[in-house]
Amino acid sequence: MTAKTKQIDRLIEAIESTGNPSALGLDTRPEYLPKAVLAALPSEPERTEDDIADAVYTFNSALIDALADIVPCVKVQAAYYETLGVAGMRAFRDTLLRARSRGMVTIADVKRNDIGATAEAYAAAYLGPSAPFSADFVTLNCYLGTDGILPFLKRCELCGSGVFVLIRTSNPSAGEFQDLPSGGRPFYEYVGEKTAAWGEGEGLMGTLGYSSVGAVVGATWPEEGKRLRALLPNTFFLVPGYRAQGATARDLRGCFGGASRGGALLGGAVVNASRSLLCAHRKRGTEDFVSAARDEALRMRGELRAALAGE
Amino acid sequence: MTAKTKQIDRLIEAIESTGNPSALGLDTRPEYLPKAVLAALPSEPERTEDDIADAVYTFNSALIDALADIVPCVKVQAAYYETLGVAGMRAFRDTLLRARSRGMVTIADVKRNDIGATAEAYAAAYLGPSAPFSADFVTLNCYLGTDGILPFLKRCELCGSGVFVLIRTSNPSAGEFQDLPSGGRPFYEYVGEKTAAWGEGEGLMGTLGYSSVGAVVGATWPEEGKRLRALLPNTFFLVPGYRAQGATARDLRGCFGGASRGGALLGGAVVNASRSLLCAHRKRGTEDFVSAARDEALRMRGELRAALAGE
Image 1: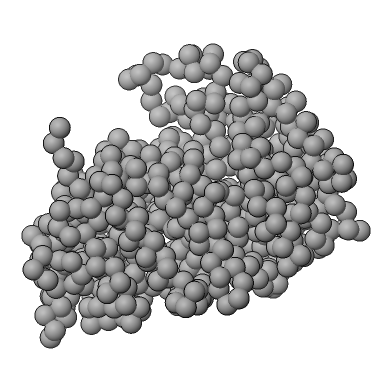
Image 2: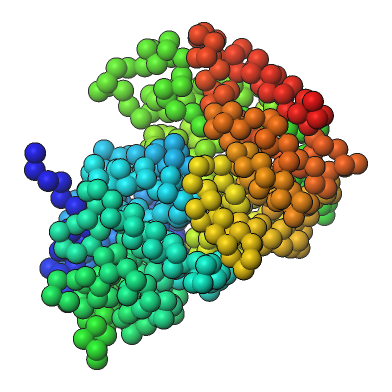
């Protein structure tokens, strides 16, 4: 039996080969679509969930196809598809499949959490090639403790998939619970240590310095990012909050580094950008969302690389 | 403009009128279906997601129809539907609709959590009559703090819906994070106090002593349940963990009481039962799952009432 490819290794290799530690965040709200696309839809009340979901999928597909050679990864935020109902879930599934077919690494941003038996059902829904909403990674919330996480890790061991556990989120009120002093340190550090310990489980460590159990660390909290990077050298970070939420490339520099090959600064994290890519055409006042997103993706790559080079 | 009916009031009234503080937990795994139903499905590999999801919905509908006069409420666990893919999400939606059409109060057990903008999309997906997966209540995880909760509360104010925030969960490792000493008390108490404070927001207090912001408190932790009941008199509890997870009616007695009318012990909590109802026919060795579930629901009602009467 050959060893299963670990998606964490694949993600790192894809970042290295594109020279771009970023993810296309497909948080696609219908209002982000170009005006011409929206105008072509049936008008209310004839407009159905299917019409909107199909238009969202078409938009996503065009972006995926246009960016797959320069962006290694997509993160698809489930909420924006659930809000479009059953048709939205079809668009969610098909968007993940489209990205996979173009060679991109896929993250289903679902932040699921439940007791063991139920976590098993969630893991089967999202992880592994035969899952109905198949992704390479899922995001998780660990408030329920180890027995809500283990079913996902079993799946990771089996299929080579990975997870990102919420540690320090990007939103303004993140600190409300996450910073609560707990045994002489903030609560999120304790969560971080547990996450690193989960990553040491059997069959979860990749070959490139990082485990299949990653962490969500908001770009909007540079100090916390730096502390977590030092605490968790073998934990890969998914970093939301860039641009639309206010973080700059310099803010998130501290999330990089870790156990990367030869100490390469490019390693250790992937930065998500959603609105800045999805709405690049609006900012530029054009209907050509594909070119606008590609230009913005290249600009972002340049900005991240410059920041990592210490410029 | 007439005041919007609050679902928390409707839930309490439905509990009083049925004399039954319990919820039918539709955590329907395909293997729970009677053998004859499973045998009638096309065999693998012809069996599709649609076949299974349809059978699950048919099973759920029969239970809803048979129990609606004696059980006030259903809780539908999203994981078991997501794991059946797009067809499963259709069954999830239709199960919620069926329960509503039979007059039952509906809880979508989704444990969603995200930053503000995304929480808004989740709230629109689940709460309010026009939501695509419309339920009267959703369950939430509050690790992201207030700004991930407020979009749901806005929706509650608008539509009269409610939420249940995870405080102390029923699973064995619940204490791992939830009990962490935080400022001289366990973390879950701090979460409980925040939850109560959220419930004091404008337009959220019902007319029967409880707010639209409830709490999930596991039946498996009697001491914690009692403490939380004392701390949070105006917070209604959703109590999982009865029977299949090992808790008895006596264990969860401490979750009741609170601010109920005339101090009635029946008030203040609703107890979820999933496997004990869904699999009652198996225990009895019959294919007649409807009669078996009805008998078990009546037995459970009797047991809860006896325990609350101090017997």
